[in-house]
Amino acid sequence: MRSFASDNNAGVHPRVMEALLAANKDHAVGYGDDEHSRRARETLKRHFGDDSQSYFVFLGTAANVLGLSALVRSYQSVICAQTAHINVDEGGAPERFLGSKLIGVPHTNGKITPEAIAPALESRGFEHHSQPAAVSITQPTELGALYSLEELAAIGEFCKREGLRLHMDGARISNAAAALGVSLAELTRDVGVDVLSLGGCKNGLMYGEAVVFMRPGLDTDFRYMRKQAMQLGSKMRYLSAQIQAMYGTDLWIENGRHANAMAQLLGQKAGAVDGVEITRPIETNAVFATMPLKVIERLREEFYFYVWEPTRPEVRWMTSFDTTEDDVETFVAALQRAVAA
Image 1: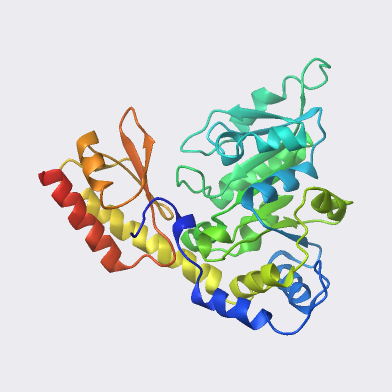
Image 2 (image 1 turned 60 degrees about the vertical axis):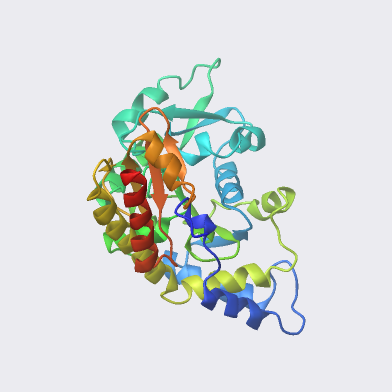
């Protein structure tokens, strides 16, 4: 059954699968000392600059937690949107493994501002409170919203002025770059991001993400932290080959553009159905909508997706690199039948 629940539900892009098969020849040195891994690290340097350093891990949660672990100590805190993935959907992993407090602040469609961050700094110097040390933002947000470059730069400048490190959860950064028409460096390094969780699974990889440090010194001892966190793959070439297939070509941006385009098509056609209201701007590959609960129940008999906010009720539909126009037409036809029933 085709799904609009999550871009995680899509399979592996054929070109990534080909890269895995190509890597599956002969023997290769383990733990990242192979040619595939060296080539992938150099590829990411071309995206983020010669001063950047990249480390490959298996999971997005691991990328977020490990990236933040290089920025904060246990008595410090991380400021993020109340809706941030690290705050809501990672099972408390940041708090458990960092030992640090997450401070959720008010947001607009998942986006935070310097004005929202500032009140969380009032506890500085008070020994009874955790000490704010980093800000984490998600691009695009959990609600599908995009930070503009100007908004990102404002946060970056604020963090620099206040002595805060800036982390970006980039699980869907390809969709953001495609929507804004900018490079990965413009979206991260150039606006003051210190550490990036670079996504892959949601954009066509079988598994694998990268933790990217933008400047020298930020990754001191990080290789030991990755090992201790059980994220150092012995057969690293299979992870690295996927990242090379994605970011060593234009596949990352092609996939992002396609998923975004399918979301626009889905929003346009679904929004024209009586009783369906598109509730949030469609900026990347997420579509949010409200409709009667009975319609949702009928539609979910044919297509799996999440009810995002049951009280409205609001649903979320996600498109992916392999969503087709036929998928959208079939889904909307099912939606029309559910409404008619």
